[in-house]
Image (cartoon, rainbow, N blue to C red; front, top):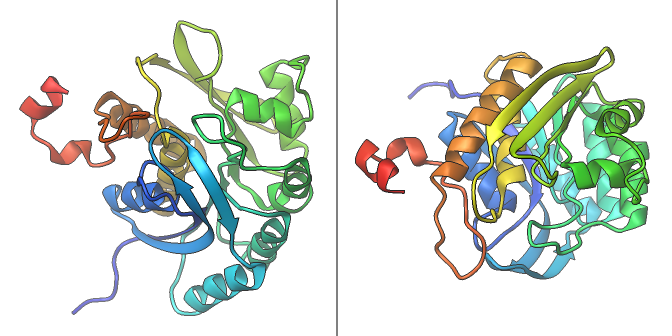
Length: 273
């Protein structure tokens, strides 16, 4: 018997019965990267690979209790936050983050599902801006989310300007993903106070994917927990995520689901996929 040698990451997320996104996707990703995942349930969804039918947010006191009990028991190396469920839960998670300022927090601001189902009201987005983003080391919006976070539904701001305004809310790094942009390749760009840190271009894969954002943010949190600095963690997390999408499966009638354990399949099966 030995003390746990694995870096521990605590994810705050809503459940997804399909395991395409949400809490289950975070756990799969973190385990695949050699971390020990802990979880705080922020909500329960009714969904499948095609879309979301319902979301029931957890009581904020229960969110706080889940987190405090496990944080008093284990040494956590990173936080990851996904679907939050309610404005009250934003405040609950921000309270935890404020009490553990030395634990880096990666925020995936999930405002809608991959199929377009809304997860966040304007009040929740406002609470996220004011309460949670100031505690965030890396925030990972897609281009649509980035524009909503800066209250720019008409696309007037460039993504670089969006990143500047989001960073001004208090986070250290902004990674804007380009999946929803009309470009030949997907370009993901990381910004900090000094401006652009790195831009990575990826071949645009065919199909629609359920859980790519969860995978990327969880991978960043896991790699930060292993000791990588943010730019390197972002680079490696993108490579990992792209491979999960390249090897995605379609177990249902809706979107493709990333294969977070692609590396465990043999080469012949990967080629066939």
